Length: 322
Image 1 (cartoon, helix red, strand yellow):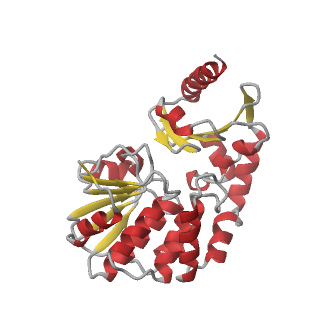
Image 2 (cartoon, helix red, strand yellow):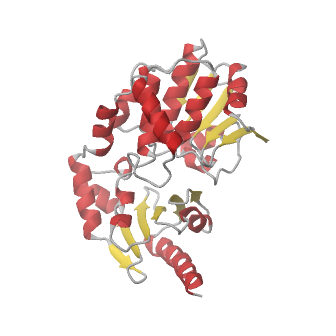
């Protein structure tokens, strides 16, 4: 395993390769897709063959990122993962196929497991798109409007439209540069932050109705079961916005969303206010992420997953009170 210190070193590695497969994480969000498709476009502009692969269906709201990037026919010779901290986040299909074959990881998660042969991680980056943009520039490629759309999507979605504490001056400068390069920021912001499907509206209503206040109202928790998905006509692809809701309640320090997966296990998302480190909490349950946003997987059924979560939260608050 090699740690790559600079975007230029990552670019030099990519310059030597062809037939490149870019892996994004399962249950894809704007950052992983923005990274994947922007890098793919840049590599193709160099005359290389490149594809993006996702284990899960990509939500239709991201169709503009995929436009014009038809799948090319080739056998992968070099595999790159973007915005992926751990191979288990790739989703079942791609984890089974590629977990031991990944050549390069481009990431911004401090919890990265260094699963690739070579890894570049910038934990100070608000989004992996910040790192990918630097790599694209080191490849010597023009940032076209299509590439700019992808990078802007990653920057905006991983920062809550530039509202979160992970935003840095560099983040804002890069966003401005993407707009100058032709990113349709107004349209992207409308789709990502101001448009809700009817099924999402129904899901949000159910989630707010079942929200629980815990630990003297310092925690707020939402639980989404498969029954709720069935009732609302929604699915996992519409859960990104839900994770932010519990933390928005006044006085809440830790917002929790428990989401039942089809196999009966649970995906847990934590959103915290300073100084509570969400990544540190999730690491105790086998997960990771960032200081204010992290996640983990817990075995079902709900009673078991909740028991594990409650124990770790109690231990945390007990230690805080000592």
